[in-house]
Amino acid sequence: MSFVDRWATFDCYGTLIDWNGGIRRELARVFGEERADERLRRYHELEPELEHDGNLMYREVMTEAMRRLGAPAGEESGLADSLPTWQPFPEVPAALEEARARGWRLAILSNTDPDYIAASKALLGVPFDETVVASEIGSYKPALRHWREFSARTGADPDRHVHVAASLFHDVGPANELGLPSIWINRLGEVPGPQPTLERPDLRGLADALDSVVPH
Image 1 (cartoon, one colour):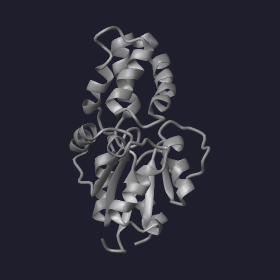
Image 2 (cartoon, helix red, strand yellow):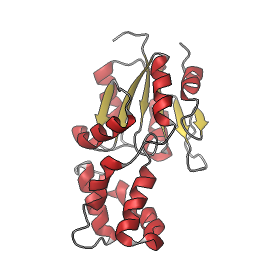
Image 3 (cartoon, rainbow, N blue to C red):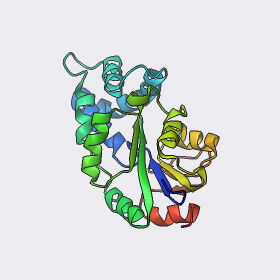
Image 4 (cartoon, rainbow, N blue to C red):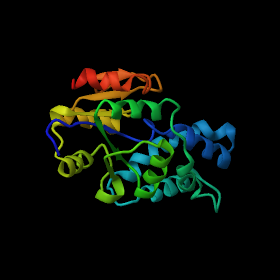
């Protein structure tokens, strides 16, 4: 690949696809609306514990999390089954198209499985040049193997590579560790810990933000 390529890598769920919304809807269906927020908070605690050693597929992570949340018999797989229906944030497809139109190559680095990413990419409707998912490499972010695998596959120049994500823990921190610039999509109004290169409330203006970090 040409040394002039500019690469934007993305986390998918929470950044491009409405992860919290998708999870919460299923938790509300299974546990009731009045318990959904508490169960969502607990899910966010359980997920990194279950991902820690990289041995479980993401479908298994979600199913085991539902068991630990106390899902009734027969409902343990409901969350995993619902993921392919989770929707993109409204501004995302147009923002990705604009970045592609300006010459950015796009990739996804995700803590999920190939079938889930295939379903989500179909909903996004925008071509991606590379995809690295956890179950293919036996590792979950914030471990660094996603980025190293991406680099090995693409030969991307780190000086022309920007990582875009909503999670400080899973994505911005590791990008900092690797010396990569990052754009933090702070949809939840959080207070930063690891410092991103740029912060945006959503993906509107993505192409301009990318161009400001790595000019053409």
